[in-house]
Image 1 (cartoon, rainbow, N blue to C red):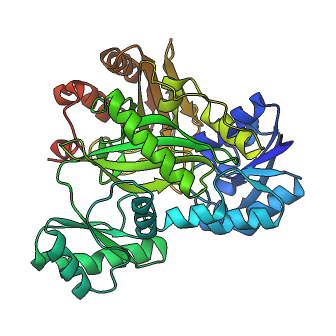
Image 2: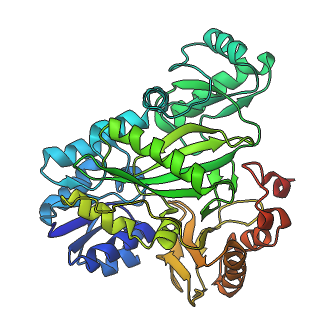
Length: 444
């Protein structure tokens, strides 16, 4: 097992990894930017190294600085968390070259799944259903017109190197395609440094379903059930839950088996999430894969009782997966992402937190690095905390989330708590009648 792990991240996920390491008896190293000097992850780690100024490109994303911090502290492994360098195949390769264990999938797998067009082709060949579309990168608007005409409108243009809704455009007619194609390419180039895009048929009212997986280094891959991620704004998730109200035990078993088989075929190891769109007829279509731990991993932990971050570390250290059978979800879990934003305009609201009080009680979990008098920085993601609840049933979980949101006090800045309260009171949400366009009613 590792003696010392460097956590190449910040905020609540850095604290989450530090907690897992402490429980495994592993020393930790925090890295921090000048803006995060007084952050909790810096205080709770055994050692801390400043790696640059506030700007991410000059600190958390700067590979030489992170590797140097690991070398001077004699860390034998690096956990990247999510975001930043977590899906950077080059960084994983540098770790290997420096004899530092990267706690994540092999670099070749990260690179393969990071190219969305290639991932679609590989997963289709491995047996996962995919939407009709281009067989790879679309080189020109002329080729885009031909592909869209053959599969039928509406279509969606997506950045091959992207995610999070950037470089993505829905097109409903041939007349719209030229402008949408150029715009998607431009956005993809700005966001990811690569202008490549591909095209798929657009599903009008899908649900966003993802499967949590874990693979060891001995060829075994298992899934830990699904998460429902359909409540989102501009392709950014707002809350997640597990299990999905739209998934039966039979569907979970069938899709889980397909996911395990597909990932085994590419030699997948460590944590990952396979994301699908599901249409109204309950047909699944592979969308993409995230080769890291997810923001929403706590909902799976709550319904399975498995510490996924500890499992990541153990697998990277050479342990085998010892689960003999798939874990059926126990009860229901919901996670709300509490962001420093105006709850309805979504304009960021960084600043000093004047008062901070988290809810508690049985089945209530708060993952956060915030506290009274801390400052929510404008330099990074606006996530303040993740509020997760677990109960015996979904109705009970909704009620528990309602009272927990009411008891969650954050003063001095605006937060998305009022928006989540509104969602919890929504009759369609309570009945499980929603899709990825659910949030459009609030925009209106």
